[in-house]
Image (cartoon, rainbow, N blue to C red; front, side, top):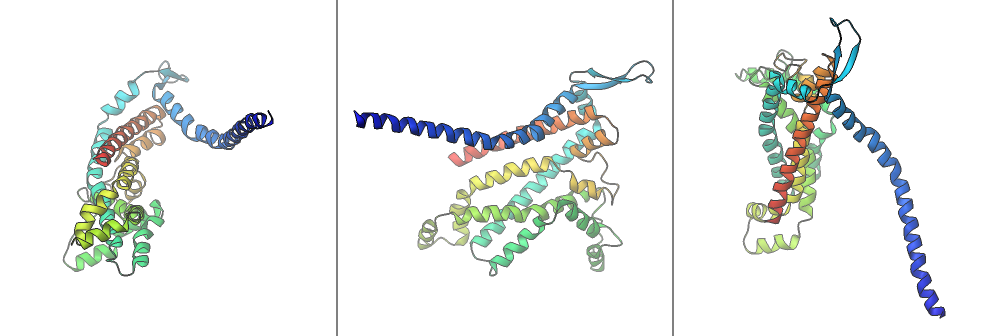
Length: 310
């Protein structure tokens, strides 16, 4: 009887301790979820509410402004804006140039580091990662200085070699901004991919070398397929970050008229909110950008899952 009582008491005590641990964990999670709700969920809900309303004045426009529910009218006006549509097209072109250059460069650098091609590996890692340590605003200011004719040593050096190029004209400003993004983010992604490469079993690589595979063959046939999950994560966050393009064109716009206040969708939303003081259209534009990011993220996630399964 004593043994039976002991065996029934221990599980109950274990369940009690487990319940106490669960309540303790929930208690520690409360501050996080509170801040998350205030800083993330509440602004999203508020933006949605704003996007379905508009400020309208009665009479001849001298009356007090009233908040009126207008449904999808703000979204229609945003899509009817030529500058917003042109900004989306320009952002799409930016993605087509930036993502292959940045991700491709990160993969190549990571494979070179893992293959010990770089003799001073630690120094090379530092030099590659260092641009990411520079804040985005400072990086954009540095490159705006290097792009500006008359004061740029880079432009002067090219002119001394007989190359006449204006990095800030209407045809070159997009690749110039792409260059800033590639300079900032390649090193960060190199570190992620290089870390994933360190987890590749060395036995597999040694077996491949015994079979006669060189570094290039091993990189293409063994290393690259094994780091696809890490590459998928990079692609996901790169697409989300690219759709939030704001800092670089905002700084470059101070140095050239080729970049306007509505050059990309985020600049359009900023202009609507703080220049034209139309918070409702700005909220609608923000929701459109967020929806586009969600759709592209879902597409990348599904494509990545299929590639990883195959």
